[in-house]
Amino acid sequence: MDEIRKGIEAGSDVSVCLKNYKAGGTPFWNRFFVAALRDASGEIIRYVGVQSEVSKEVRAKAAAARGQKRAFGN
Image (cartoon, rainbow, N blue to C red; front, side, top):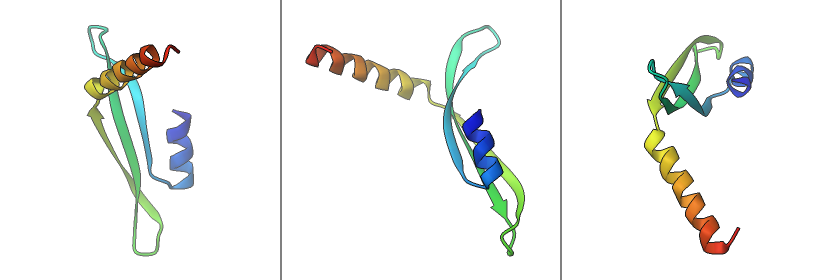
């Protein structure tokens, strides 16, 4: 959350991966992107945020990392 807060304060685009929980308590991962929208003079007038579930990608990356660890004996 600090990364998001810092990006907003700086007026920078930010993309982070966040672990959330469904109503039943099941965890899932979201990619959250927020960007500042500016007017013609460069002033920030609004922010837009987009989120998408990336649980499959996170699990695949973790599985690949575990496989690589086993392959190299780490």
